[in-house]
Image (cartoon, rainbow, N blue to C red; front, side, top):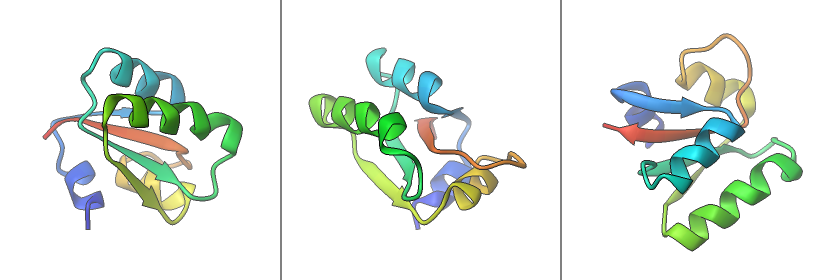
Length: 83
């Protein structure tokens, strides 16, 4: 599963603002989106991924994505920046 890449990554971004910045700077290699995150938060990021040919991996929930990022709260979006 791709979440293992996130767990073992040297550098990631957590959250919509930081992830969008990483996409705009062409630093993001892969984006992880929680399926239960609000569309208004994740839709602009998904669109930016399409425009920049960045793969998007859906994660079952914000809680699962938060744990994969090593934080104790839910996370809507995260990016793999450096493996």
